[in-house]
Image (cartoon, rainbow, N blue to C red):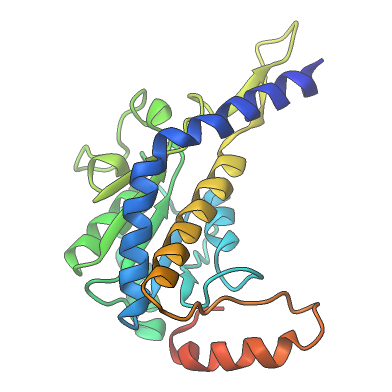
Length: 237
């Protein structure tokens, strides 16, 4: 049964995340350092990868100083060179984008101009750059940026989601079709693991955790509002 095969493949991928533990720990340390110094963490994903950035921005159980960089074009301009500069300029004007902070750039293929240029621009501004990508996918495709570079070749840290070339995990018998995406599940897992690694380091350092409670819990609104107030001028959500 296809759904059983899909579950099996997902379980295999979940287990493969152990291979990323060292890098996850290192990125968690960078995020902890940034937040304890009063900085922000930024997350960007184009197209479906935007869901991974949303996963850690302004949500229950999430660190307050984590911003999603929203793309108003919803990925439709991800192959257009120069668009990233405009997008980051507007974001920086509204929320700040400071040297020493961390940006996580999510792109399954890592080939398109937008995530590549987001990484380039962020590095130029002195941010620590993290790529969340599929190395299997990225290494089988050419860059769509004039530099010839792909995301994983530029970032300070690379976390591999382990997903197959093409993203779809299972073949449909009797057809050439593959379906059952893996990048969303793995991206959500890995980015939450990164944040948990950061929280653990912050607690060990004796730093308060600015973590949101679910707004549907009694008395959560007042608790959340006090945390949000500390960062309000920089939040994008």
